Amino acid sequence: QVPLVESGGGLVQAGGSLRLSCVASGFTLSSYGMGWFRQAPGKEREFVAADNWSGVSIRYADVVKGRFTISRDNAKNTVYLQMNSLKPEDTAVYYCAAAWRVVEPTTLPNQYMYWGQGTQVTVSS
Image 1: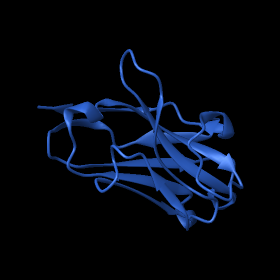
Image 2 (image 1 turned 135 degrees about the horizontal axis):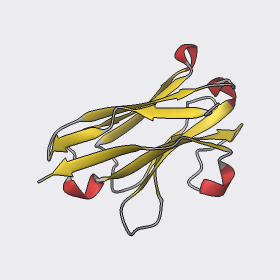
Image 3 (image 1 turned 90 degrees about the vertical axis):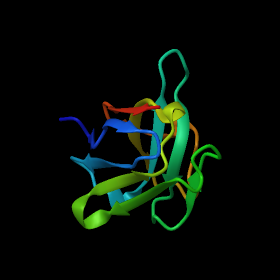
């Protein structure tokens, strides 16, 4: 059973929007801080956004601040990434991940114990 499944990726023109979803299976999101990362071809995986286990504290990468919003619905065991004003440089595979009981949002991949398989986001110019 895959613990996290992302959806919502696709092809969009620059300036457009997408909302990614990440559904957790086999564990309860309310005990985990959730993060979004992305990896473009030929580049390392990079941090995008994260919250802490309570969902109150949130952190964004500078390159997405003001354009992307992370949110969660614990009743649906789902975390979202709303992406607005998309740019071609946002093109990447986007991954969600879960970190056990982190007090503050973490940008470090090695602190996340569950990962999804990723969803492709392509932004055309």
